[in-house]
Image (tube, rainbow, N blue to C red; front, side, top):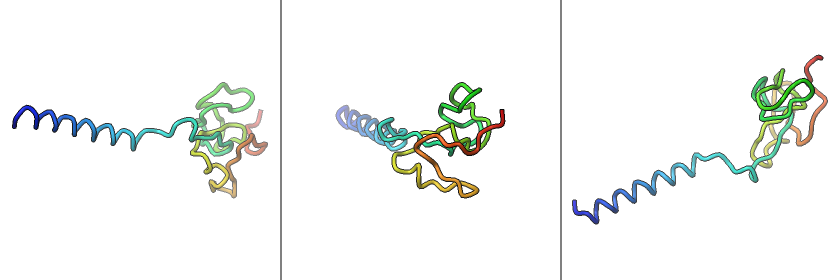
Length: 98
């Protein structure tokens, strides 16, 4: 294999890796929205109401005042157990007892 062919092979491999990384990269913040009431206990992204600090601090599943970042346009169409739905604003349902 001559030097030119070897260089081309290396460049092609790098291009493939970059392409694969683009397919698996998370969506940008502009493509995401806050969806309240969809996170499982301890898996919220931030904001979990009184007595909590931030990410990972929700006390119960589907806590209405905690959110998870989801792809835009999917929040209010999510179907959750018990007939729950996601919301673009805080919910008063499923709050931990104080």
